[in-house]
Image (cartoon, rainbow, N blue to C red; front, side, top):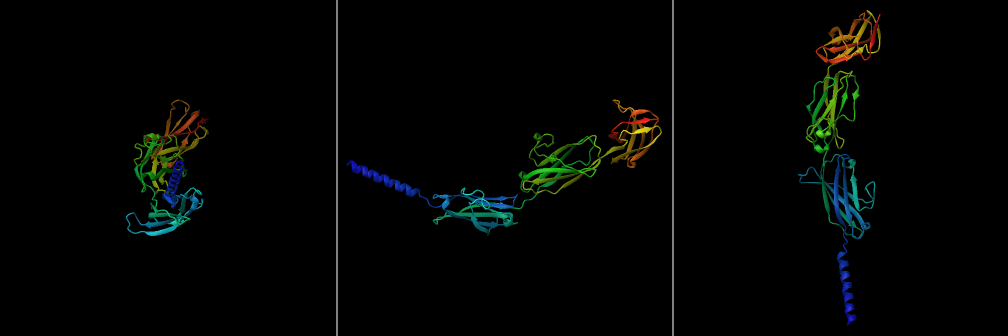
Length: 356
C-alpha cells in the first residue's frame, strides 16, 4: 500500500511540475519601453525600444518601426514618414551592442525641415515567428526659435567712476528654461572691442552677488558695471547685447551707445624739462565737453597741490600754446578739466621741471 501511495505522489508531483512549466513558457517577445526623442541641438529624432524575449535576446529576429507625421497635434490626418528597423548591434545605428535596447537615429539630413507631430509604432518579431504587441510613442518636432531681447533700463551716458546698471527682459519661444546666457561686448572709443567671461547679465536674484538683479527667474536679466575713474578713454561706448539658448540659437543683437563725457591730457605727460618763457604746446583730447580749463602747479608732490589757471578755452581746439612762467620747480604738473563739471579732469602722469 505504501508503494502505491508513493507512486501516486510522484505522479502528481510530476504532473504539477509539467503544468507549471507549460504555463510559464511564454514565447512572444515583449516591448517594455519605447522612446521617441527629438534633439533640438542636433536636429535629429532618436527611436529606441527595450525588448525582452523569454527565450533569450538572441532569438529576436527584428524590431521594426513605422514613423508617422502630421502637421500638428490637432491635425486629423497623418502620413507615413519613414519605416525601417531598430538595431542592437552598437554604433553607428545603435548605442550599446546587445544590451536589449534596439535603436535608430534619424539624423538632420533624413529629418530635414519636416517639423510637426510624430508618432512611432514599434513591433518585435523572433525567429519562431512570434511577435510582440505594437507599442507607440509620440514627439513634437519644431524649429528652434532664438531668444528675444527687450531693453528695460539702459543709460544714455555715464561719468567715469560711476556704476552703470543694465536691465534687459529676455523671452524665448521655447520657454524661460531654454535661455542659456545673456552676454555683451563693448566697442570702446579707441576702436577696440572689450570682451570678458564676466560680461554677462544675471537673473539669479540677490544671491548672484554684485550683478544687481532683484528677483530670480523673472526674465529680467541685470548687470552692474563699475567704470574706471582714471580711464583715459571718453566718447562713445557701444554695447552689444545678445542671448543664446541651450541649442545654440542666438538672438538679434541689441545695440546701445553710451556717451562718456571726459578729457584726457596728452602732453605734458612725460618728465620733460621746460625753461623760463619757453613756448610749449599743451595738448588734450575730449568728448562731449564744450570748454576746458587748463592749470599748472609747481608743488605737485604736496598733499593738496595749489593750481594756477592758465586759460579756459574751447575743448575742440585740443591744444594751447603756453608761455612757461619763470618759476623754478621740479614738481610741476598740468591739470585740465571741464569747468561745468570738475569731476571730468586729467592730470600729467609725471612731474616735469621748469628752470632758467
